[in-house]
Length: 491
Image (cartoon, rainbow, N blue to C red; front, side):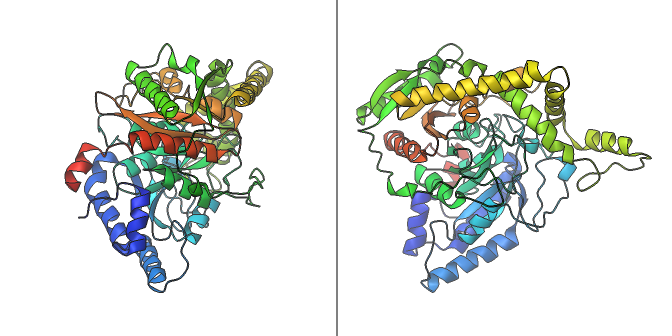
């Protein structure tokens, strides 16, 4: 088996030069999935037949010298909460264990139109509700850098697949940090686009005012190329933006000489692991050395982010998951005599504990007598957080902070403490509430050989700033090293 290309950029050069074919790259990925994924559990469904057919078609286009896009022939994993025509979409839930959608999500359709090779569907926390990818009905995902550790969630399968060389690119979705957190824990690049930048049509909804599909890659160029294919207005999604989609790959020089980087010092204080703080401080030094001006900024209401997020997202989840009623599709309880019992037993049997917890939180927050005390106050906090970002971006082009307070924690370590689990997302949630784009890029490795990411945030529809600053950090630190098991195979 060939060594995996270190980055998307190297993979593209190998394809364009004719040194590797799409069929070869696809077979390498499928072979690694067969050999290694029993340990990591990154994939829920692998679509060997369709992947091979798509790879052969891409190679035929190259042979005929037909115009090719940046993803033509490139294997991609898709998070299993994006519907795929004819291919099982489970949302990692017993409720949808056998559901086969009749259509593709818009993002998936755009991947196919761009010539990407879809390998299969990646594991996740059930209905994307989780920070560790331990809440999947089909088993937890394990971190390729240390299988005793979580990969982060909810897009843990997508990020583990890229980190473990099972796929060079992947699609995740991010509601409160679900791409960025696992990207940091797994040592890859993950992006939450501006809300509205990417269509949500065909993304099974969790928190409709927050959800955004986002790219995962080994390098910044891969994330930029994938996001460009995913982005753009979609008439099937009323929240998708008409904003033009730039060619983000055209400005990845890492030139930050004219940029002001705002450091959120409050997010480098108490509760942050010393090794995380050191890695982020080195990232600040690297940007300063590259010519950026470093300024301190404040997000004074970010401390309310976790509380506001779990009220708002759970309220939206309560509404969105009401469609799973045992009538139209999905699991249906057997031997029931009335409609109310059908609803109760279908949901009790189909949903896992974390999904039930969030539905209960959301239903309570929306109930008569509690709406003003919880939901309305959470919306006020969201507006204050959005205003904080507006003020910070007057003084800075991009903000920098840690992605998470610690590197990846051990499986089971926080499983019985929901509050400790929810606080894992404290540094990513504010950007989600504000609707601004954010990115995780590797900037260090802990003494335990676990990746550490830096969190970059930019104003709405300024993803180009994120990619430019991230490219500067990538020049300084390089991509994260491969997990030991992958490096040994490649040697």
